[in-house]
Image (cartoon, rainbow, N blue to C red; front, side, top):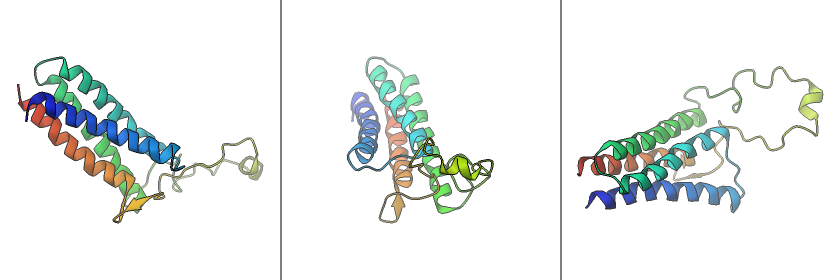
Length: 154
C-alpha cells in the first residue's frame, strides 16, 4: 500500500469517526459529554494533518497524525476508565468531587441553568459491552498504526 493510500485511510478514518459522532448527536439525539467533545479535537487535527501530508514528503506530518490519533485514543481510554469507575473523572462532568456542592437549591432548580447536562461517568450508548469512548479508543489505535506505516514509507 502506498504512503498516500495509508494517509487517506488514516485521515479518512478520523473523518468517519467524526461523522459518526455528529450523526449520533444530531440524528440520533445523543448529546455528547465534555470528554466526548475532547475526543473529537484530535480527530479534526488528524484530518487537517492528512490533507497537508498528502501534499508533502517525509515522515514528519504522518508522525504528527499518529500523535493526534494516539491523543484521542488516550482520551478515549481515560474516558472508558471514568465510565467504568476505575478512576475519577473531571468534577465538572462526573458525580465525583464537589462540582455541584457549592450550588444552592435555588441555583439547582433555576430555569436559567443549562438543561440536559451530560455526565461523563455514565455510558449513554454501548455495543458488544463497549461504550463509544471504548470504540473510539480501539479505532484510534488502529489509525495510529496506519499513520506509523505512512511515516515509514517515503
